[in-house]
Image (cartoon, rainbow, N blue to C red; front, side):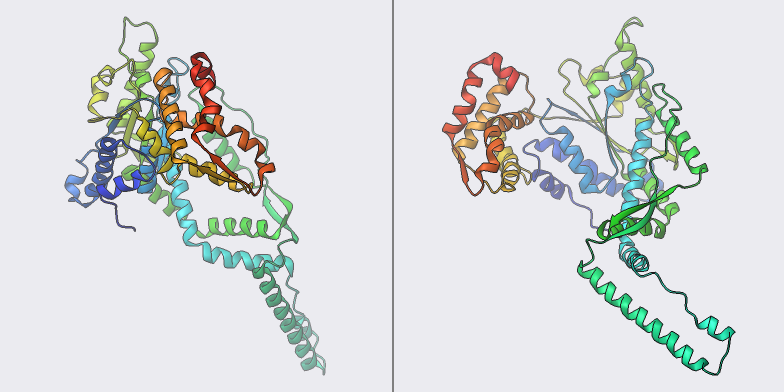
Length: 462
């Protein structure tokens, strides 16, 4: 198992993708490191240490979701993002709050299964290769047994002939193996038995909040039916992938996978509760949407506090799952949450709005920087895109101005501005093959300035 990252290393990794928000990065880094620390303390104390859940407060597009998502990747943890407002969509019924733990467990099983399949991949590739060779060169029944049943004076001659035939078959098989490995047979088609996934299913329950029961009942009925397969003609590379996946699945121990997955979900799972400010509300005379909002908070409370949820893989305890909540909190405040839920989120961190300098850095610095993305896209057409530093500065200024005058959607504004700026170049790229396109401040202004001047127009277009 890899050495856990220190808080400073976690922040450094987050810095590769997220600009600014130093306080938020520090707090999530500490929360992640504390999970490892908890595993090192004596067992009698381990269960007493509760995760320090976090509320991130800030406008949309400042990096709340990205911080949580990158954190989960660093920790190789099962990670689920869910909008809290989903649980209020249909008034009092809403979506079953426990479903997020079932979804998280499903993700955990998938994560561990893929890791285990990677571990047996070499063995699975060997078996798949042998099966492919059997399809390409079906083994002949040896006539040795027949010779022995009818002994004749020339029996040794028959045995020698059978042996020569077997040697010849082995030689042909090895020649085929070499061709297969070189890729010389990649254009050939073979017949393969694959699972038939086009089985008609009946809609069992349509009621809101019943989707998990519906899914489980479907699965139960599906397991009672015999597995259906169909023959497909596929090219050899696809056949190899199908066989490798099939053999990998056979080689792994699913009981062990489920056990490890539940452990990982319970001790390192992360649930990201977005839009928690949408359910921040108290009862007001028993009428209106606030009743539904407070109801959702009370449903969330036992999950966040620590309870046991039934999943199709077994019981999952939520006591040590890390919950990261986020919301803009423009209208509501964290203090509008019910006191019990507030107490389960001891860490509050506010993310700052992005400045023009932040926009410049977002365009240039991260490993997945927007400019790098657009350059790579146009390179596929043989077009080289070159941005001058002044053009980047102008783009950042425009994005900042539009955010200031209209709705502040953070870094997402840059996507809109870039798409508008490069729409003509992207459209004409196939005709510009082999050319270098320079994006200058004048070009940026010529495309965007008219829209910026007309505030009503900028609301629609940018």
